[in-house]
Amino acid sequence: MGSNSSSGLVSRTVGSLTETSRRILGGASDPRAPHNDVIIFLDEENLDQRIPGWREMRSPVQIEFLGRAIRSALNQKHWAWLLKGETFYSLIEYGAEGIVIQYFPKERGITMVCGTIMGNDCEVRYDDRFSTTKTFNQIIQKVNTMKSDYSAQTYHAMKRNCRDFVRELGRYLDPSFHPADARTDTHLHTVSFGMIDPTFPKGRRVG
Image (cartoon, rainbow, N blue to C red; front, side, top):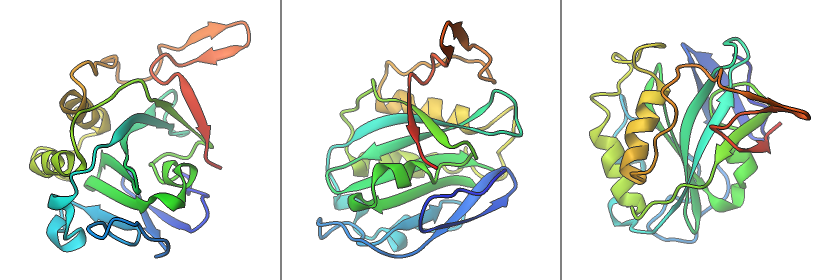
């Protein structure tokens, strides 16, 4: 894996997941929300200690289904969900260290936030056609109940990986979420001006 190049990020690779440590800066206007960047490894950390007011954060969110290429694994992408609130972004993913929740005040910018998803391509692909009626606290509560099934111990690169987690959470967020079951992104279609990945119709430069 390569290192993320977004400003303010220092990354190191552990297993198949990029662990990201970040500077503390910025702040959200919601007094119940964290005022700094937060990264939570659910296998090891308590949500109530890291985001004390999360149960009261009943704000609606928009969602994006994200994928970032892994250059060492041909045609494969790491999948994640991005939650977009009024004052924050939250990235939720699963890998060799279990479920990881990242939280950012919104002024950090969506490009920087997307740059923290595991992978080493300079573009993050996404699909923003899905929507949810769930609020931030409902989603985080759901994710917290999933941590025993999606722990570091249960992770397997082929049998139980980021795609399984993203599919299960996605069906909770939007029942219409049913991406292809393929384990690799080999279902690319060639058109006269290049390659299109039908799973992720849009792209965002992150490096």
